[in-house]
Amino acid sequence: MLCASPKRAEADLEFASADPAVKASVLARHLKDGVKNPRVLAVIDGWKVEGKTAEQKVAELDSLTHDALLSSKCQLREVLAR
Image (cartoon, rainbow, N blue to C red):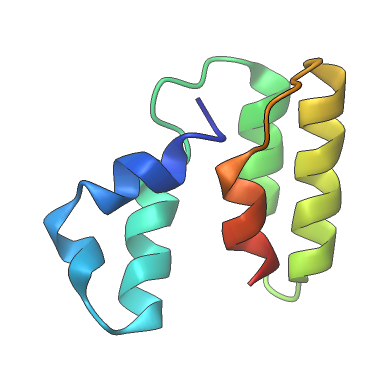
C-alpha cells in the first residue's frame, strides 16, 4: 500500500499542479491510504519531522520493504529519492 501511494496521488486532480510543494502535499495525504501496520504508520509519521533527509526516508523505506520481503521495485522509493 505504501509503495503504491505515488500512483494514488497521481489520480488526485491537485497532483497535476506544477508546484512541487503541492505535489508533496498530495502525496503525503495518500501515504497512509489502506495502511494498517503500526510500524509502517510510525515510519510515515516520522517522515513529517523537520530536517529528515530524503536519504533517511529512503533508508527507512528500504528497511520496511526488505522486512516485508517485497521483490518488486517500490515506486515511492524513486519519488523520495528525488
